[in-house]
Length: 155
Image 1 (spheres, rainbow, N blue to C red):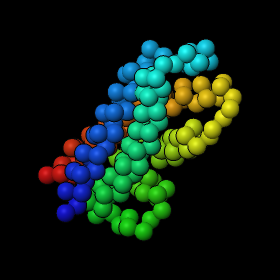
Image 2: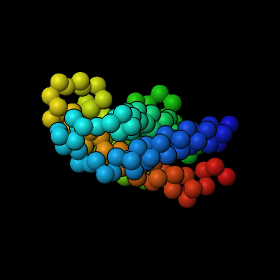
Image 3: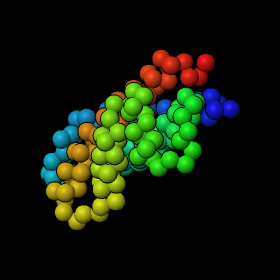
Image 4: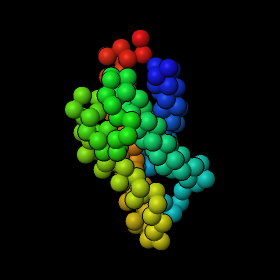
């Protein structure tokens, strides 16, 4: 049962990661974004920015659920643990490199996606940061998948 749930979350993560990577590819020519460029964005470019923000959040949330399931499949009792403890266990087992980095990514995401600044300079700075942390999130996802494959968790 747990293997099916893990495979299901991997499928969800794959969709989010593919779409996040697509938005990154399509924004590459704009980043680092300047205030002048921001003011000239067309509808398609704005939609790629929206997609990047949305998919980052969705991927990180789904990856968090995937981590919990992977730990359960390894026999770790994480049922009622707070998420920081799950991250620490995942780091200890080598599933992720750095639990603190995950928290930092989460905090940046929350700051960037929930702050509605009227200062264009702050918006542009946030977009540039989100672009960089999105690339890092994709790397972390790849590391989790490599761990799952190496440990033959789905076999």
